[in-house]
Amino acid sequence: MSFSQLRQDVYSRNAPDDCCEQKFCISTVIFHIYRYKRCSFCQNVAQLIRILQTGIMVSLRYISLLLCSLSTIVMAKVPSIKLSSGYEMPVVGLGTWQLAPNDADKAITAALESGYRHIDTAFIYANEEAIGKSLKKWFDKGGKREDLFITTKLSPISNRASDVEKYMKLSLERLNLQYVDMFLIHVPMSFVKDPNKEAPAMNEDGSIVLDKTNDLVATWKEMEKQVKAGRTRSIGLSNFNESQIQRIVGSAEIQPSNLQVELHAYMQQKPLRELCKKHNIAVTAYSTLGSPGASPDKKTDASKALPQLLKNPQVTKIAESHKKTPAQVLLRHAVQSGVIVIPKSTNAARIKANIDLFDFELSDQEMKTMESLDRGESGRIFNFLVFKGVENHPEYPYTSQIPKKSS
Image (cartoon, rainbow, N blue to C red):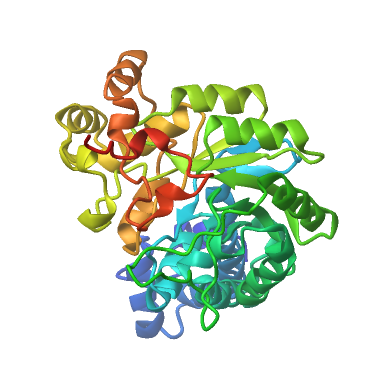
């Protein structure tokens, strides 16, 4: 029976006077279906409801499929940068430095459900295995490997040509992946490995045993072999200075497609970004929010003297005008400047907020205000001097950070 016929049945008054023809609403209809068993109108409505019930069940299946595809829709809102390797790298990823293995599943799950498709980790973070287990859960639920962008890094204890392949394979084993999307040399320095564990060897005075023989160009040649072997799609650098980058660029068969460095409003790395732009190297920023969770002993004295980025009055003022958080403004500033960001959090709400950057834009004046916060090297948070003796390595990248000895 069609709906128009059903309406005609009402108009023909085939039901008692107090039946649902007088007030045709769904609640009244359902009530009278049970009250008037022999009412032809109510019988017709009952039949229609049975038909609708079947239709609703089918519709629910389609709704379920639609909900399953929402993550793809969310992902589409996150722009990507095309790398020199030809692959696309999402401009927002989840950072995992200091992410404890016990928190990894919660953080990775929250990130993937919020639309993240870029995860950044490293061998030295000691959480690759936990991240691999979380990724497997996602794959088992129907997630596709090709939708993800996974970055990991060559540890300083393996930063030598002879160890690249071994540690590339070890990272893949821990992540339970056939390949990663980006493999970075984590730092230009090389440390001697402790024979009993995956950590740097230490001298009696607490300083790190340095391997001063490492050849960055030779290491890079082995990185290139990992691309050719299909273990990584792209390769890059992390924490390298300008002269070190130029040395690699000048000798590379496969050019670095990414540089990951500390970059935030207090240290915007403009000369380094210009160099990377010249050589088509995408820049990824860590510590974009000022690393509020890092212990003070890891931070430079100069950075500790600056106001916290998340509480900077100029940042909070811009945030209020857009009804956004200070974190979102800091991240938006970086992304709007062409920089990839990898904020770290274990809080599901903050993880979601950190990717919610594409429904607002900073004005030209607001961008100038953010740029005025730049302190250059004085704004650096991490100089690695927490590793005792590291400044004595010939490849230590931040020579201006070395304290001057008193005469």
